[in-house]
Length: 350
Image (tube, rainbow, N blue to C red; front, side, top):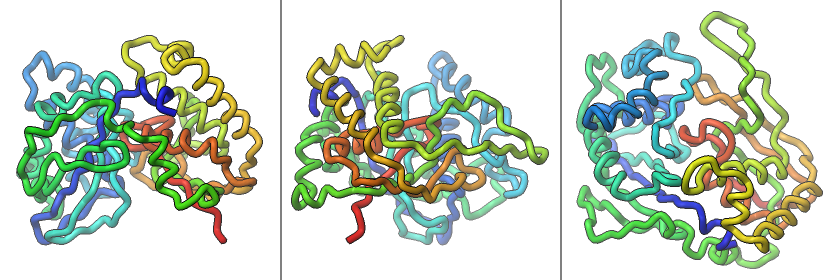
């Protein structure tokens, strides 16, 4: 599978924040508020010329009130986040956890720099200093006293090398000797996937659980309005395995170097043998039926989409597992900047 993932540039950073005040309460969906707060901090730190694309990207938030949204009473906050991705290809993914944290408790989240923006210097010079700012600086005119912002320490940052995490920051100290490349995430990717299981017989997965909202269909049509200030969208059918693999291809095309890429660009990069292998996997996916789905609309103030579990019959073929594994890491569908479109595979119950 190495030729298939070789063209994808990606740097994964795992953050461990440690709460340093008596109590903080996270927003219902951390990645959206984190994107707003950190994106605003980055914009304010940059020189005027460099800040221009950031100002444009953050405009949808500013139209809703910018940072003032955070201080509003719950009932007056937007019921859904705007489509306001940063001007660099990034994904903000918060590891599942609780909403209330006390002093000393850890909060884990992952930042992914993708495509042409998978640049460690960008992280060190632009993103990390802004994170240090929001760790120690309270929001202006804050009326609430239990916000996360200005109330945590950066305990550690790790960088992915294959499926291992290597330390970049420990106890607040940055390892300047650490050399981070946009290809190290893929080292041993295919072989390590099999090695993590005891035997081939353990690769018997028949369930897929969406950790963050997924929406794969064209969402260009406006949602219907039911009440003033709120909107609802009729959920599409849960995605079949073949839809997930097709969405993976679409995602990979957007992450290739350069602009105006097409499927042919991807196939030229991976080669005919890998193309044939993937198309064979796609055919096998068509032979797996979606037995049932326990899916529901994402909660209020989350990005739109569905979360829940899908059940397949027969079990997912082994040949599909590395591709699904890759899709879960890259995120698929819409609003991937907010961490949408990722899942875990679950083994069949015995």
